[in-house]
Length: 123
Image 1 (cartoon, helix red, strand yellow):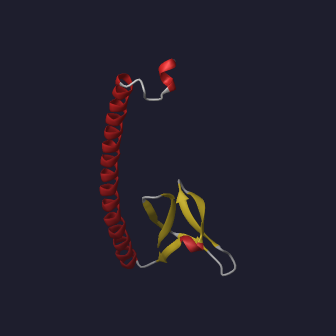
Image 2 (cartoon, one colour):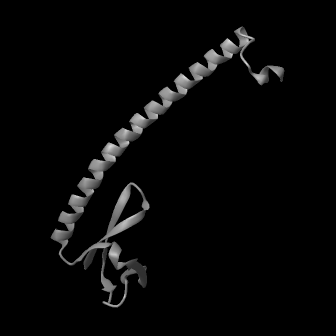
Image 3 (spheres, one colour):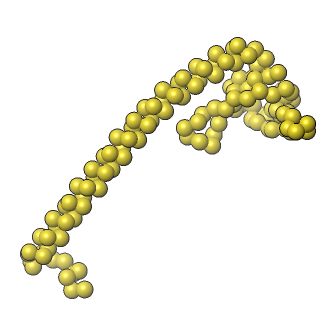
């Protein structure tokens, strides 16, 4: 069995995928690697760019060690991203509340002061 860690491009919060394959095909003259799986008894092939393969090994212990290290780094950054998103959402709520307070204040001022040049009064 071979163990693969591959770069993942479809999700900004997931940077790699890992899986095992019984067989692969590659050559020095091709930019891709063919990974062969068995699905319901039929051989299925997946093409992947060689540059996206981080690790291809038969050593399961080494695979697990690298996978753990990558997962820890990803998890640490995802925690920081979640905290930053929560802070951003809080700041956006504060901005929304503050802006609407100013809009309401200005609306009241327009009602009280006919000298404010605002064409909307005519409609």
